[in-house]
Amino acid sequence: MGNETIFYYVTEEAITGHKKAVKLHFWQRMKFASFVVGKNEMTVVTIMIPAVQKGWKSEKLLWLMRETAERHPLYSGNIRILIQPDVQLLLTEQKHDASETSKLLPQSVQSDTFLSVCFPMIVKILREQFPLQNRGGWPESVVLLLGEFFSPEEQMRHFEEMIQPYLPRVNALTVIYGAEDSADQKTEMFQAMEMQSGTEEETVSDSFQEPGRLRELIQEYTEELYYEYGLVSQILCGRDIPFNRILCGRSGLVKRNSLSGGQSPVLFLDYGYPGTEPLRMLKEGDIYLDVVSSEEKEALFRRKYRGIFYQSPRKYLDTMVKSGYDK
Image (cartoon, rainbow, N blue to C red; front, top):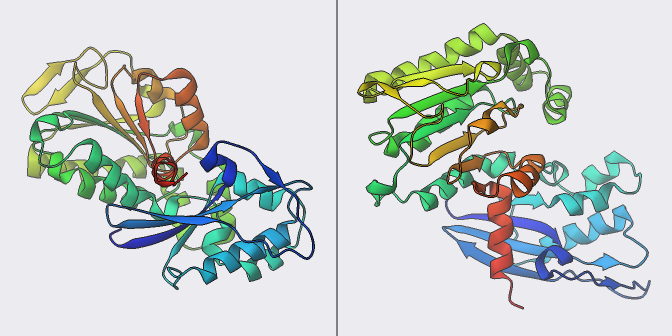
């Protein structure tokens, strides 16, 4: 993700902490305030959307969003455009022709997800949490939670590449995939992916509708980890998660207090796992990285799991732009 520019649309209230509704007059030319934040070879142009007294007309808001971006000196054809959920709500409050939306903004804006940047950004988050030069602070136990937004091959390949520098230290790896009897109960986003195209999404769907094949795919990757690093992995269906278990580590069977590991913090990597069963494995001090930035899971962690370090690309980006705002 090096040297990448992101245009990020947010509400003004999300940045300033204050809601101030402005009155629009037909003779006024509205301009959105923006500022630039840079970190780890990533440049974020934050465009703030103010609240208006009578509410936004979605067509006008879309037009102003596009105009603000195109007039910015950092705007180019290869930028990524992301929209905060609250801004997405402003765009959908009034009914309008979807074809008009497609004319006003590129396809990357219309889909308010972090899927296009979540893989590279989660690598940045992991490297910050566990600096490569600090070998003593690397995770010893890892729990990988597979989801349905990406194919199993994509998730396993990305995980393997991302975790590779830490593998000499990892003693226990647990891979969890969805419950077999609910494999066809997909999230709304996954269903939308299937409707948009009949090619790549069908491949993802087929993989998850064949739980036996899914387990075989996971085993192919974990066997590679065993042959290269001597790491014995567990593969569990979600509903088979026990409260207590003996894990297989590098040195054989190791008695653990819980599935997730011993006394050291456990690293959880969630690629969009649909269930909540793994959450009972959490202990205070564990680290949970939500790859696909689920709003529901972030709210759950704020409410019930305050002793767990939770991070996601969306939260990372929001924290980054808030700290970079010049009051």
